[in-house]
Amino acid sequence: DGGITQSPKYLFRKEGQNVTLSCEQNLNHDAMYWYRQDPGQGLRLIYYSQIVNDFQKGDIAEGYSVSREKKESFPLTVTSAQKNPTAFYLCASSLGRNSNQPQHFGDGTRLSIL
Amino acid sequence: AQSVTQPDIHITVSEGASLELRCNYSYGATPYLFWYVQSPGQGLQLLLKYFSGDTLVQGIKGFEAEFKRSQSSFNLRKPSVHWSDAAEYFCAVGRTGGSYIPTFGRGTSLIVHP
Image (cartoon, rainbow over all chains, first blue to last red; front, top):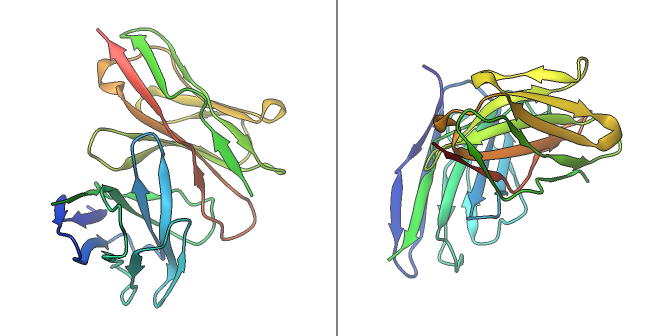
């Protein structure tokens, strides 16, 4: 079955450490997205990519970085510059660039600080 | 820019009762509209979408939504709620005619009493 796989499901970060969240899709979708979810705040867009080797900052990109070297993969790195990284992170993909395309979501990664 | 408001943070209903979750959007033209559902610790699943045409849209799991242009609303309804419907519900709006990222509301948490 096609879908989006996020790993790991739970991740712990030490002070000063960078951590990378994995997102892989086998839906042959062009566009991929990273969202951060905090209680009561809905989904906030971190980064998105509409094509391989290209990505754009979302609303809260500071302290995060991404790459899009392959169509299937869109990893997110939470750097030590992100001072409040504890949150639920969701990866999504959509068929094309247009906003009429519904997004397909992974099951998320919960990141906590040790 | 488009925006979306979900006025109710929490909604509590009894099992078997009817349900209506409110969503209001702000956008000059006819937007693309979506409802998603999120079970605890999981990603979002698309319930239904509206692009054009019939203003009453049927979705999965017995849900429907009605687009009302005059009220800038896209409320989600279900005639009889089941305990398994307890979840977080998100409304999203996308702009037409371009590669724009949908905007999500902050979500409504549905609690179902037996």
